Length: 115
Image (cartoon, rainbow, N blue to C red; front, side, top):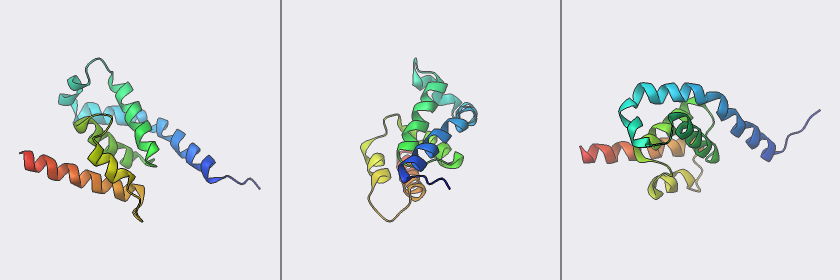
């Protein structure tokens, strides 16, 4: 029987985010076409890859979580603002996807207040 240490499992999950990059690129092109010029010289591929790697650092691995993280990153930029990073890094019983949802709601409230 093969036994994997938790560090190995995390590394495998983190590497799995690369399989989602093509669909995340399409997501950005479809839903954030107006924001692509903000990236400047950086390509969409490069930005999405950096965002996916940042998401994996927060233990976010599902395609849905990665897309949500990319949505936040395209709106707020990378690295993420300290307030959002703080929510994602909170030491609480909340799971990484729950912390992501909290960061997402925080961003929506912020955008609503600006409107």
